[in-house]
Each structure stands twice: as C-alpha cells, then as structure tokens.
Image (tube, rainbow, N blue to C red; front, top):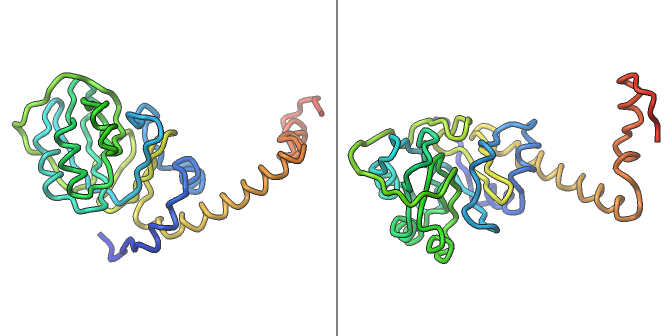
Length: 219
C-alpha cells in the first residue's frame, strides 16, 4: 500500500460528486454491478474502503469488520454474489452507526431494511433476504476483494448513490477529484444552454456522427 493519505480536504471535494460523474471521469471505469443499489431511495455513501470477504451465508467476517473498521470507513463486503441470506441487519447497523462507520456495500443480501432505513445508515446491497446467516468461518479482512465485478482494495474511495456504486483506486483519487470537477462544470454549462432552447443533437454535433457512419440523415 502506498503512502497516499485521503485528507479531509480531498474527501470534501467529493461531497457533491455523483457515482456516475466519477465513473465517467475515470473513463467509464470502476462501476460495480448495477444490481448493487441502496436499500432506500436517497441514501448516499462516501469514504475509504475497509474490505472483507464472507463465505456464502456466513457473516462472522462482517462482524469482525465492524470491530476493526474506523470512523468514516465504508465496509465493502465480498459475499460471492450470494443473495439468499441477510448478512447484515438492524443490530449490526446500530453498531456501525454508533461507531461512526460511513456505510456498507455488500455483494449479497441484507435484512431489516425498514429499520436500517429508519436508523439512517447507508446500505448498498445486491438483495434483501429475511434468511439469517451463520457465524462459523473467518474470511479475509482488509485485503483486496472483488465486489460487483470490480477489484476493491483497502483505502480505495467508495461513492454510492441512487444510481449505484463506484470505486476509485487510491492512486486515482486526487486526479479523479479534478476531472470530476471539470466534468461537473462542463455539464452545468451544457444544461444551461439546453434550458435556453438548444438541443442535444446540435450541441453534441450528432450530424457529424451520422456522416462518419455513412448514414444519409441530417437534422
């Protein structure tokens, strides 16, 4: 792991950056599987990843992650995409919120979604399942894992919102903050022009796209 430190000032630059903007700013990379979504509309998560890996149907490692993660961390749990157990519920959410953990992203199932929502703890999961988990096998903690088809390493930046979740590798966090800001400024100007009556067809010069494809179609 490098000596890179995610400072409060750098993290603050991402407060308004959406998952989609960061994904585009990195050249359309880093997006987790689109099935991993917030359990309630309006949830947002932002922070460095504390990673863990749970065998299917076993949440012992997730309990260990709750013990070891620091305030502000986002626990990112690889669960092999197994959706038929609720690995995380309201009791664990209470513990996470009490400790100041920023949120959970899990490539598997959770339960007690209404109570977790009431607590206001951000959870992004592949499914919601009422089936309970066992506590038998300790998996990897704070090691690189694959979640939602993307490699996530400890300290990578996680952004999650209604559209989904993106992971920004540690080495790209500072650079992506700048490219995201540039993209936001560009889109703000673009939207302003559209509200003045311009069309996306003209502003994106889609006539030229048709011509390059040899299609006889011009608006």
